[in-house]
Image 1 (spheres, rainbow, N blue to C red):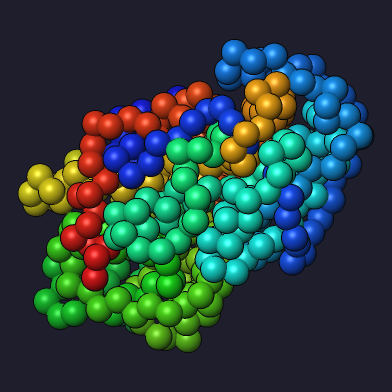
Image 2: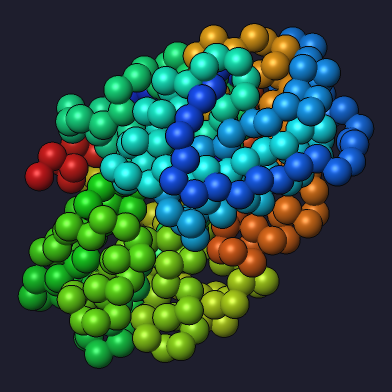
Length: 365
């Protein structure tokens, strides 16, 4: 899928990310994948020659900053075996979930710059923290080395079946305050607050859920009327009729088990056309929101990795994302494989045509 550069524009005000430059870690749980074959070399996105021989027989740590079953974890376990095969290496996925991705990101940035540790940047959360001026990561995103962005977790807003809300339009027209459940922080928190705020929905946001699984459990026991998270979190509930989808970030592929229930649910782009936000500031915030949902999960290495080693990692990821089996499995897991290589990802994150500060009215609460 072709990169939508204009949609990623607003991140540059908060982030300046480099495509060159970027490893060690401790694990909470891990799964190893060892190379079992070779692969034809794919051209790296930068100008450096890929140092393939360096990785032969070595072990790479792939930090997933969430619990098993989260989208970072799912992407890591999809990519690990194919990247291992390409590099003739072993790739171990290690889950470091504390701090709602913050601990895992900080661990990645503090790792040795030997090319043997890669992990994830949670761009949605990191942008929100920068806008709010709050704590979060303890490193500069501009110094991290980008490997690529494989895609994203499909975001969905759902309503409790017994609530009066069956469509997003009904939510917009609500005369009374809506109770909305929210994770403590992260991309889901950013998306929910901006979506509801920019569309003027009178919502009482109930936060404190430390993970998406905790959020789903709270929704199913009736803690609130609506909730927003990745489609994978609510997919089974939607299919079972225990959650009513009101909005989705991007069109749901036909391969998704919830496709029948989701095919007519409006996307963010469709809402912009059929029900544009009132006011320039609100419209700008929705543009930033669409960018965040599309370039929210970036694979990176720590600062200082030799250019040839980084080029090999970039080539390995590009090769993995070109495999039909990886794309098909991603779709089954409600992940959207819209691969941006390192150069495209860097360009998207550095574009300065929009201002991430348009999110501030909805995040600084």
